[in-house]
Amino acid sequence: MNTVYTETILDHYAHPRNWGRLAAPDIVADTDDPSCGDQVHLELSLDAEGRVAQVAFEGEGCMISMASASLFTERVMGKRLEELEALTEEEVLNWLDAPIPPTRRRCALSPLTALRAGLAAYRRAFAGG
Image (cartoon, rainbow, N blue to C red; front, top):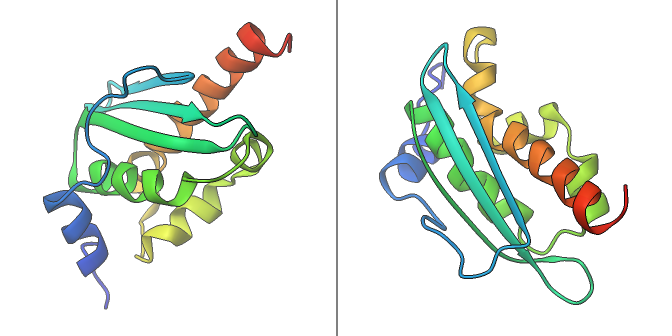
């Protein structure tokens, strides 16, 4: 398939997973790209071992950013903080299983951008980092 709008992207856009807010998130993060209007709000709750126990997102933007955020929430469930911090752009792009053109990479990476900001704030506030 030569189009970026694969079944996976269409499905996650039409039926976003983990949409909403959490009652008591440990990590809260936002990203806002004024050049295209994509906005992602990401919330994660951690269990006693520091793994993602719950995750939710809200946002608005293009099909790619919203589908990526939905898929992202499924893929980070159960990961430890160290695993979250080690996520790469290429790994997140591969999760989409679509040919993301360079002009749309920022859209597809919006949940990772939000997560990185949230992790940095969490480390500063709770881990003394």
